[in-house]
Length: 296
Ligand SMILES: Nc1nc2c(ncn2[C@@H]2O[C@H](COP(=O)(O)OP(=O)(O)OP(=O)(O)O)[C@@H](O)[C@H]2O)c(=O)[nH]1
Ligand SMILES: [Mg+2]
Image (tube, rainbow, N blue to C red):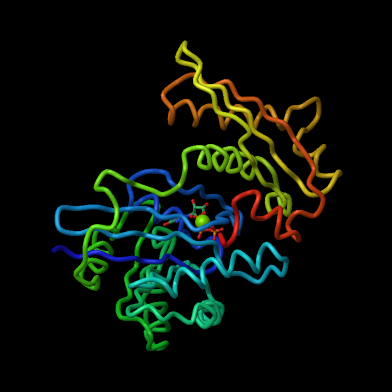
């Protein structure tokens, strides 16, 4: 029997958890963005080698936003870190207040047998500052390992995999060897559209965006037709997403189409609609309709 187990990636919003899981799995299974609170559900990524398999679990950032959505998202991270063999806590190497990380760690109250800290974004951090960070985090006294990495450049990520392997228990392969994620393709398609919408829209709006894919249809001539709805939560936001004469929606659609065509290896016909679901971020039913938050 080889080694195997569950490793939960958790931390504050925007520290690079999803960028890191994509790097570890070697495929885009989670969307990423420069805005906080991008990830909204539990995402399993599988890394399989000959004698070793790890189920990595990406989770939403735990932050201070007070809405029902934010509380629900934080619960995803808390629950996942409780159910794992290793908590892989991620911090942003540029952050100047480890106390923010300390309070999130406290909320995760990990019962995971092991805790590894990855200090991420070291491509943006000077060596001296990094040493200070390692020292400050070391004083927390709760990490079995501390490793600086860059999810963006891949620096030290192979060493992180070795550390994970070292700390995993003996166990069976839980997933088929070729499997990379538990996320349905149709959900990832919606997420790619949401990523492009976030990227093109500014400020608070990304938080109010949700995407539902209504239909994916393979047409015979190497063409895939995708129909999806972008939801906002106030009437006034709808015009912003559509833009002047539809220019914003066109931009979002064009960017999404390029990525979907590369992913699906077909031409893509993308039909996007913008809809209002009043105050959905305060409504549990809508949150779960969109596939976000804790699943029952
Ligand atoms: N320079 C640099 N940027 C990074 C690195 N890792 C992530 N980023 C960037 O940081 C931003 C946030 O990355 P995400 O992976 O979306 O962060 P996250 O922790 O999953 O965020 P939430 O899902 O909102 O909690 C994106 O703009 C990434 O490109 C890194 O190692 N170096
Ligand atoms: Mg994320």
